[in-house]
Image 1 (cartoon, one colour):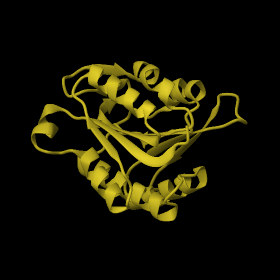
Image 2: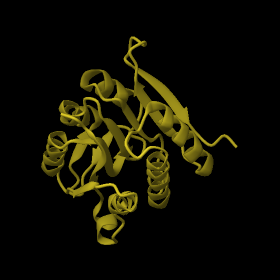
Image 3: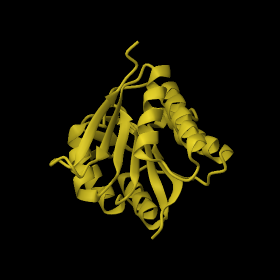
Length: 200
């Protein structure tokens, strides 16, 4: 199956964010549409709904998966407070990630243990996300800028070089640490690790 350079967004927020309309994923979706892209947006409230949405992503021809949820280093949480540990998360998404990229808008969840569970086993090209807790407004701005830069540079493909360049530029603008784990054939562990931050 030939994969399209499109973003599939799965979002699950806590009840307060949901009630107050703080839907980061829908903001990103609208920005992508301004670029002429055709994002798909799925809002889920339970682990079962999340699993179904991931399967739908796997059946699609979309290359990029964006997950927006509240999280901590141990894993993420759905609206209905279903906890998904990072190893369970990997088990859910791994069958659907070959030759794809994962963008995680989930506080503190993107770390080496997560990358170790996903990249070598799934064939995923990369796992990217903030290393620490970030505000909703910062997350919305981060992903809006990043996708804007990436698709302005190349409408049809997100390459490793372009992604690294855009991540460096984005972190210069925002006081956010981003972890970027990328598939590697040279390293025995199967991936490279880059921590990008505003050092000024």
